[in-house]
Length: 180
Image (cartoon, rainbow, N blue to C red; front, side, top):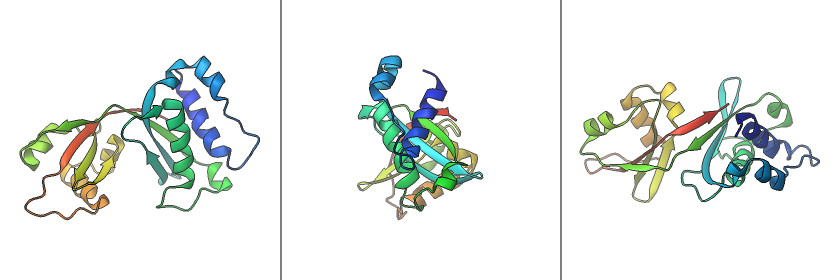
């Protein structure tokens, strides 16, 4: 499946909000690109002038790749609680990046040094789960936080986790196919 097809779907999912005549012909897409029927998990990241402008995704696949991509594209533009809704002016300048995730795998580790030895920067996305809450960073976040210590500290902060002597969260890793 061509990357441009996925980017066009993401763009149209957002553009529909500004132009009601935009249609996403799901039947034709599924016929022409059968892989879109596969159950898949995506993250859609929007940037404007090199700065994050929205990022929403699915960690665990439960719907078709097509439906997941459409839903997360729209949500990244209009439902990310960290940002105001995307304006038409911003939409015309936005960069869209799609990440297609592999299924998360739990990492068993003894301590932070052991965990550090098992994570591959720029390859592994990480899910931190503790007492029913979770936070995640895509592998791309390693570019801004290249050390394990910074990456892990920011991931804990993102999830508002209180770190104490008993803090031993579940850690899951995944990889992504990045499309931009």
